[in-house]
Amino acid sequence: MAKKGEARERVTLKCTVCGERNYRTEKNKRNTTDRLELNKYCSRCKQTTAHKEEK
Image 1: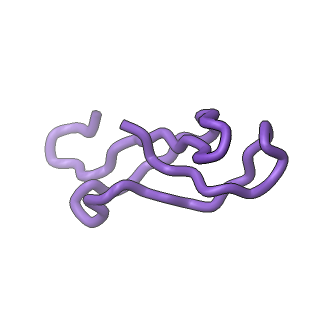
Image 2: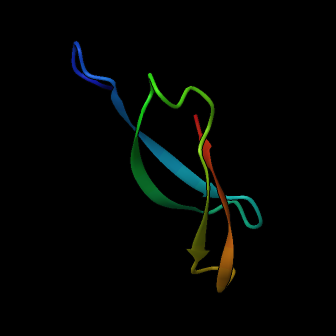
């Protein structure tokens, strides 16, 4: 969790194809209220796929 007064929080990105949790990143929860979706490389799928933030 973020400290008092800070807006950044750590989130886990999960592959939409195979479901593997590959990446951890930070986002500013004040500026980006919706869930992140980034194109990243998945080592299990061996290709670039969409990764969505999981809660």
